[in-house]
Image (cartoon, rainbow, N blue to C red):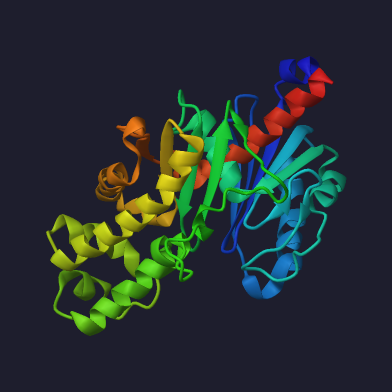
Length: 319
């Protein structure tokens, strides 16, 4: 390892595999991204298509340079101990694929695989908005809602499969879950309802004839004082805060980080969640955890994957 550092080729591979996006990055020993390849995912090609993309991109990215390890953030439940995929909720053909073993054959390096929300949580905890805080809880508000808990700089895994499934926390006894109220698609759907019920409101007019991605107009409408936008944002923040109150009571994180596409609403969302959380949390925990916006953006998973691999390398060096 020291010889490779002196030669300037101390490189680590990080991979993000999502439902719409594939990223491959090379990083140095400090987890800093040096090179990147970003590719669109074609869902119709399934898991085999994504593996073909990886196999084709790696030789050009690596250019015969050795890597010390590889980390992967995968969009779905995985067996993090073995590197085997349990399933993908978005892309067919991943169930029971030994992704870790396959990548190890391709790269000749040790590979560690984890859920993408866990990996993003690690990235934000070590290199982003969670620096200096412990424990760190991360929630990603994207097409779905996922979560990750980092304690003392390590991903917390419970009993297998051991993910922090904040998106599936129930908000009532009827089966309403956080994901059905706070994901990007659920906010999109509610904006489409607004277009039918309140077509004159600014948010409805900004969304226009768009089908999908309507939530991207929420911040602009909120900033211009649109009553419907402010009501929708407040409802979303309260639902999310209620779900997060269970995280606070169970794990008492020092900070909760909001990431994913919906976090692009920015400060209005962050402040609304912070205000809404207080009344849901027992007084002894007041003022409650710091609520922050993710600092790494679309780099949260790739940087987390580099950190995951870096930990694997360090653990191996200690063995």
